[in-house]
Amino acid sequence: MKIGILSAGGDCPGINATIRGVGKAAITYGMEVVGILDGFSGLLFNDYVPLDERSLSGILTLGGTILGTSREKPFKKKEGDVIADKPQLIKQNCEKLALDCLVCIGGNGTQKTAAQLFERGLNVIGIPKTIDNDVWGTDVTFGFDTAVNIATEAIDRLHSTANSHKRVMVIELMGHHAGWIALYAGLAGGGDVILIPEIPYDMNRVNEELLDRSRKGKPYSIVVVGEGIKTGRKDEPAGAYIARQIEKGTKLETRVTVPGYMQRGGSPSPCDRIIATRMGAYAALLLNKREFGRMVAIHNNELTSVPLSEVAGKTRFVPQDFYLIKQAKKIGTCFG
Ligand code: F6P
Image 1 (spheres, rainbow, N blue to C red):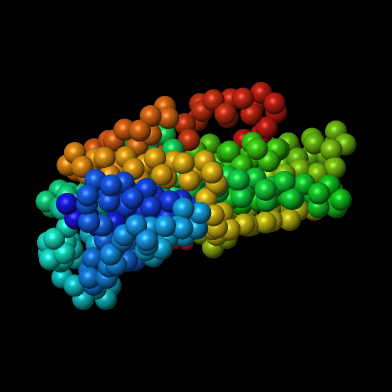
Image 2: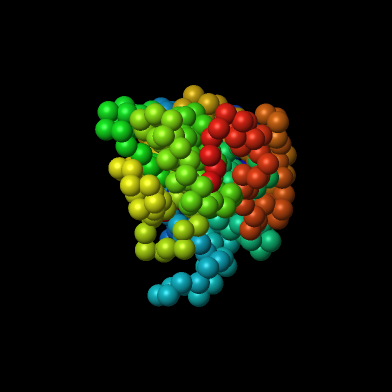
């Protein structure tokens, strides 16, 4: 068999570990492996590199993706497109390359494209990847653990300045429309208020909580904000908006920190390296069994796969009754 591997969408720690996992296991099965460059763009412009034992060595701990990535969505028409039928061109180029299957490493958008390509007759296998942890059909995605570690360290480092200056520290964390990173890092970092997109908040309650802490003699507060919370303002990031509302409503001195892309940069955590390696090797197993049209998933720590058609177009949000939310509320964490 000859297989192609691509990474698409935002980068995240663990993609290289996954490429290595798929590639090394595929080679063991006797397959030929090529890496498609820059996500689906590489398939439009025939940009690819052979991947062998040598090129797959030494990449386990590397951040980013050795194959590059792009947000190219072949099924979405955009202004200035010169290629009339991108999915058709992708199919033709896969045939020209004699690929038996395409392995797509990516988040929700990528899995949707993979499902659509499969519908068009291309053999595809998906591997979920995102720091946001919001891919439907799997309990976990690699990249998330590293992002939570980085975000937690950022919160840890805010405590000292918050204490010295008696300030409210607002930290805005990534996660797109899901609150997984804010929830986990918020709990791990001891956030006093955690606002996530899945739970509607009341600014008066947030301010009252902060004033109450101040009245009890607590010198500072940490407010963790998921970037996707609703603010009604498109022109102002979530963290800045919340900080402004806090200063206005409480008169407490408030500062905002946005770690941004630091949350998805650098070397993957040991936990993410393991998830990525397991998922990669499992994808090769599916390839060997010719089980196409499926996404690798982890359910209760067991590797499995789910049909891409079931994953496409869905997002995995934090359930409002999630056990960590209930436990955090018991120790007094305010969710607004
Ligand atoms: O999906 C990962 C992510 O980092 C989100 O948390 C964030 O909202 C988005 O990507 C940022 O996208 P871009 O890389 O296009 O700026």
